[in-house]
Image (cartoon, rainbow, N blue to C red; front, side, top):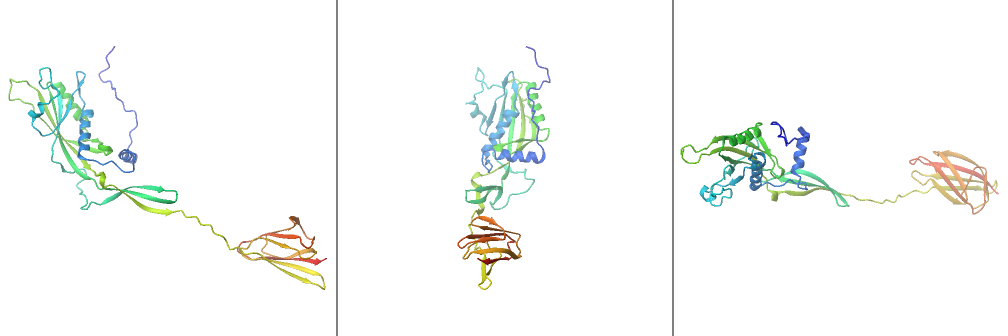
Length: 345
């Protein structure tokens, strides 16, 4: 089995990186990745957990095939902690190398808001608007959150090691990560920067007779914020009821005026269609009539006459009791009329 080349890269990121508006949309999607339209809250414990993961994963150092253990400490006495120390050798002495994380308990006012301060009152602000529909009403729910409280968390990261080559690995990682000044972590999906404030050497050099080891200090500042999920609000903003009305039109019926002359046996049907009236009119013949002509058509585009459902044209004959139907095409807003002349039989 041959060894890999010295500059061989095992981890390659082949996915294209997003920039500009697409990157901001991706950050918003990551914040709401918990399946709701509201972001996840952020507490001090979330910030500690995200920072520890950063040290364990992004500052990971492997020596002789083993990862250097990372221990999160408080400002308790070192002697008390060593009594329950799990990383010891066969002689129960502390096993080096290892990395420790100590957070200073006093949180500082945040600096990631560019010297802008929170509002004096605990107001909530619109974060997202979600359309709603319950089958009857359409509306919008407004998701509101308070302004996050910016804080600075100060962490001391130390590496304890016996060899300078191991210390060089840590310094190389630190320089690579903070070459752009800040490195972003994502507590609960919220991007927050970490900056390297200072670094220094704490190696003991006074006692030359005891065991020698290196201690390198890196002071880091997490420029984050906290967000209380108990203050989130969901408020119905607008509701529109979907109402359906069934309207019955008051339709006018056409009129017919019948004039007859017994002396001459002449008869005429005067039909009048008012504006917005029906365009079909049916009447029953009271006499035997022979209709011979249609005159006086006003505002009529077409006219169809049927006798007992049979289409006829002038001249035509009807007998008493026949059903006569007139169907016209007309402008809806205008009055239409015509006269049908005939002779009694």
